[in-house]
Length: 547
Ligand SMILES: [Zn+2]
Image (tube, rainbow, N blue to C red; front, side, top):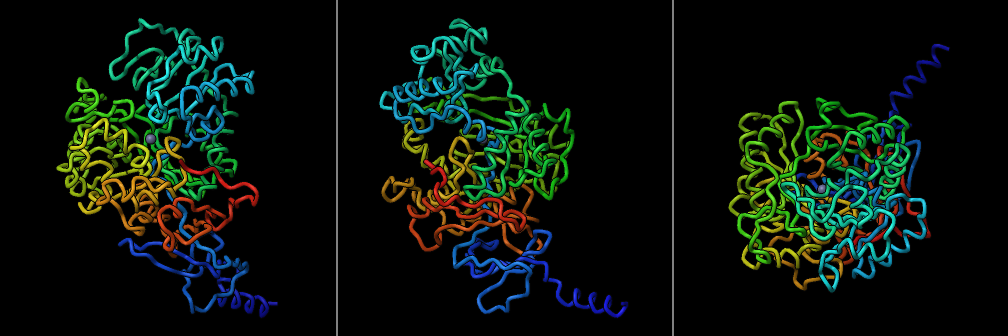
């Protein structure tokens, strides 16, 4: 008996890999720390879901309990979207979707159809219109909505989330009229409520129930996994969002790893300090998100010089220097990472100056983040690296915004616009994402834009400001290692290496062997998190495409 036991123990010691999973016969592609492409053909995954070994052609295959033949298909690390809005993605998918409407008439037609199929919805909420895509290029008005729905409240959010249009019933329910003055940092015109003015209407919308929150989260997670996104910098997280993530974690339904950034200081009353990782490294509250300005589309981005197409405004400054320093300092003193939205060059200069001060006050590894970093004075870019500031950027914003940016800024202020290569050349860290649901969470149109400065239809020819193009290795780095670093998670995700989680995807083409347009059309076939297959593409229905 004892002899059998010893033999068994010896056998176990001799073959520690017996319970492992071997993913073999893969066309593995990832990047090293210097953005050089690395190839591999197999992964040995331990029972704990972490990588034991990376295997190359010719390496002896270890014994494993489960062997998965990847069939020569391409395997990439799971994509990490450094900046997305998880609950908005889920709710957006459940609400009236206006993304891609080509005219006001089409918006009205979709509104009519949605209202007819949702007779019980007390409020009709929609998302995703962009008047820049319409021939009339005029903001929609309350009267435009009243013509379709006069009796039920309707609130439709612009694609960038910085403006809503409400019908008269919604304004009545919210107690606002044409005479209501706009609050500081906001604007009201004909039923359009921009930035700080949104709140006047938003506060009247009934809050979703727990069950609706859970449904929206589940929907968001399915969409993300279907696009190969295994980690997210979960931005602007409110307490009720956090509680939804917790419920998913408790129930074992949390798959995507969420590096959570709380929305302002309010949630700190309940979550006073960063939490550790929870649920097998799937959830952590680690940062606080602030806003320095609005968005370019609604002319809320705060510029150093007036808008080229509206010379009486420089956009919206959200905070004085002293106020923003005090707020970010409160969060930093509590141990949180700071992530601040800054779109215009004035907003970017303001937050860079504030981070420089915080960096002197907290000299450790704090990874100050600027979200979007869209329109920047080239003179300010070299200030990032010395202060340890990360540029968290969204390559598909460049392709979506390029014509609008040219109008808003004129031809002479585009040098620091969406300037990914300038960021890298300055020595600063770059993280990529999509700001979903502003853009589709699909990472592949972003990788494509990053290498081409073209949209998925190849526009414009030669690329827009092509000197800002990245190599594919640099783009993949920003979308994996870079976004893991930005989320303080590079010790466990972002690369397939021994000791890190086996978060990876299998896709339908080799991104190193196709052109930019074909790269944008990459489909994810399988998504694995922690060594488990958590999503596989149904053979009949391809995932929703990016724009
Ligand atoms: Zn955002």
